[in-house]
Picture (cartoon, rainbow, N blue to C red):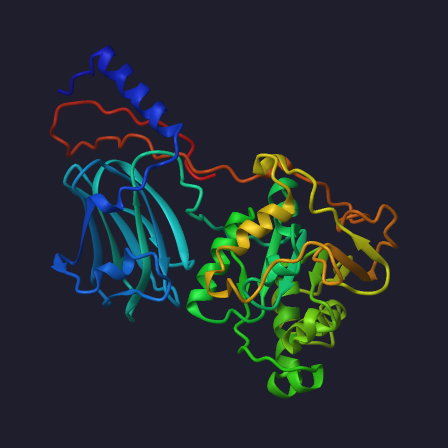
Length: 423
């Protein structure tokens, strides 16, 4: 018969858990050894070098295993290379392997694991090779700030349709930190040209830093750069781009849509086409005559407003220098500038604009179903959508103690602490 833990041991356990759960989980990757299904990995350094240009290959049916030689494991953060593959995460808890989660939905994923975990393994259950770019191991504690835990939402309040990774902060400034995190709106980012694997991971880092928790929709249009809209449409299929944007609008049903300058900011043809197709898609998404298959799948949708960057009419100028409580008093421009630093492949080529003729704070109201802007200081004006700061993302707290089953034979009762679970 199982015995009850002495009161002082129970209290000590509670104190240790509460203390650890109040602090961000420490990284312990350097305390771990890595193998592929028990065998040495020749290119293991590629998942530890924090270089998005390198990756490690795990064959179908095999597993990447990480075993801690020091403190117990509390969570892991995975960054896949160019695509996701169906896989499962398992944790070795007191010598017994337990399934934690199915994964492979997103290019980057954070998972907490139960207490008393000394090893984890990521099992490739797909039919193709799994490419892991970076693998982080953490001790017990609150979800680290850099470890993204995405979700896929349905209806959103605001949709930002940007052309390339980095455009979301270069040309739209404090929009994402202000609306996604500070005000708690549901913000969906759509990226027309996902570009290279490296730039996709940089994009995810940037979005997460800005407070975006909804996974972006990546349209997969091939990158090209031309100096006019006509030349761009000779390289791109205008109909394909419009179709992809209309499908996105119908999927997520935004109240407000924001996209690029019709003149491509500095004359970039892909930016021109993104703004132009978004302008067309605003009406197409509400028309039963356009793209009937997606209308049947998702229904028609009429957004309430469309803004384009630098549009000449019905202009509003946002103040990205208002301090944001959710970022410790930093303003939206500062957060956007920090997020741009995650786009390491683009540093040196571009800088984020604060003011001037290419100001990322200037937008024009192209279409409105709810009348003209009056206050001219809020993209959501007249929509009926209200801020929900109470919905701001909160880091995931650690999983509590693992409850023993009847098969356990250590003759001790273990307490399960509910520390919050998923946020």
